[in-house]
Image 1 (tube, rainbow, N blue to C red):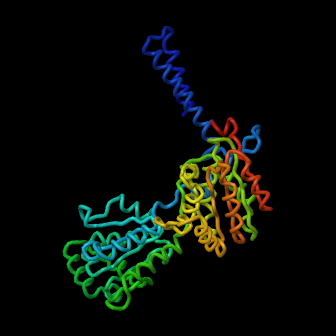
Image 2: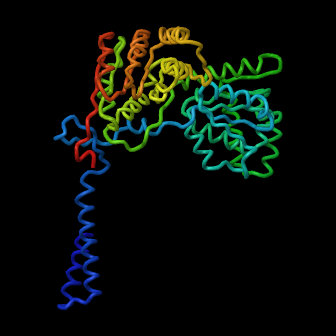
Length: 422
């Protein structure tokens, strides 16, 4: 391509000894095109799909390909649970109570309501919500199959599931065998649909109903188990599978992978002792971002975990330590409305949680000196295998922890070099 452009440029210049304004403009344009073509061919193509990473030495440049770990960090699901149901059967009773219980437990729940949608086919936004959900709760009621919307949603959910545990059916006063064999209200609904929809679509719906009937879930029958007990069991089940809260992280970050790997090595996650790490450096250098990336990657390896943001905001409260302790308990318990009476009772509750669970706790932006005793006290409660991370601008707090703990490390966040920053 570059050769063809060069030949054309030569012909334009030599065609006339005295260049006209039009010819001059044409030659200039071809020249710029030639320069761009050469730059693209010999510049960008030399390093396809590469990314500059954080380096230890400012005089050294390290280039790494983008890893799958970064993709894991930055493409996390938006919803813990996608809740599918037939609104006219359950919206005003079971679903409202179930959604409230999930919300109070801190479970991010997408509540779809077909009654609020227009048209017969589910929207692309709804498909995206399904794909961005970790788990699915399907409340199958008597009139569920009457809705082509619900049936399409069921097909989409089953096509997105990766494990059986991700889909939890709740058979709300219906017999699973009716779904499996397309009998009862489900058989009647499918017969009606056959008059309006294609054979292929009906086949997909029947296959989906058969598949969901074969999954283990919850069966609500008259007089056998209370709805309140069933809802509590569902919430406990979801919490056990979606207990790790993912913190928001921007996409396309440079140098994250290497920093996360270095922190992993310093904390020695595989060892059974208790360790703490201070991530330190000047303001804006990326302490919080690195801590979030590490948390998102490794929180699932712990029994309980929390990322404590807005510590400065707590310091403005009348009782900053009590406010921080209450926030910590809310995060660990995944409970929105958890209240503590006093510091002593809150500390006892925290001891109860941490004594029997391997925990990962991250305190972000912890520069206030009055938090030193608070952090030391929590470190004393950590059980074997637990880890604590603190982000701070200076080394004061990590150095104070060294007095109380033997395994306290410091990770100094370094600047990107000139090439990396560019």
